Length: 273
Ligand SMILES: [Zn+2]
Image (cartoon, rainbow, N blue to C red; front, top):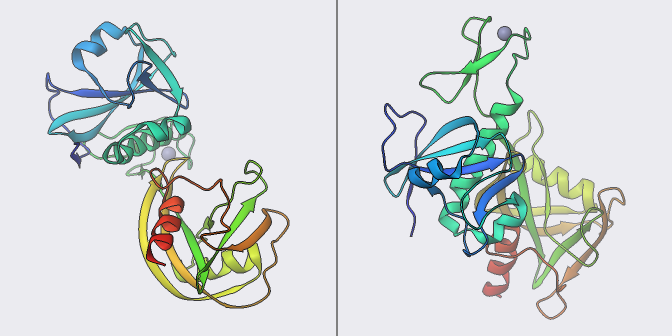
């Protein structure tokens, strides 16, 4: 079991600190272990990792937990290997997912904010807050940005709607999703996305749950919605097929419930009918 208490600032590093290590879009893991885990201070010492950046994340099982950005994909620890973060998703316990999502987003945010967007001067890490500070503009602090997205499973009696995105592998179907645009409410975004992607109107929106999705910085807000009106017609640009399925006819390839909110929306619906 893992417990995680997020925090942005630590006075002194403790000996029992633990570390996730990231290089580019990959994370340090061990080929002889089933699950991703952070390394200890001792392991960090013997890894001879060339550290580029270090950010405090909070307390994992009461131990200070950091993410380290490595200069190279080299680590001297036995059986260590950097694996692509997306393929790492299936290899982490639920409680660690949020911590790792936090690690990835903080590293990417730091990488993308080395210079001020207003004046072009260099930015530096703020001493106490999770913010980048411009060396020139007074008080210009940039906090990590999160992009809210809506994701929904639409149903019509016992049938539910799944769609195939052009970028998906063949025969892989999922729920509809999209970014919330500036000025939109969550509800309007949901209705607009569904109308744009499959040409139908929805009603009775019901919040399900949310999930941080760090590719690069989405917050997925999951909803159920009931079909209201309109003829089902994929937009042909993003979505090339959309169909009503039942438990008996559902596609074999859908998102797994253990790592994605899309899979959880489907699993929970099926369990209820
Ligand atoms: Zn500036």
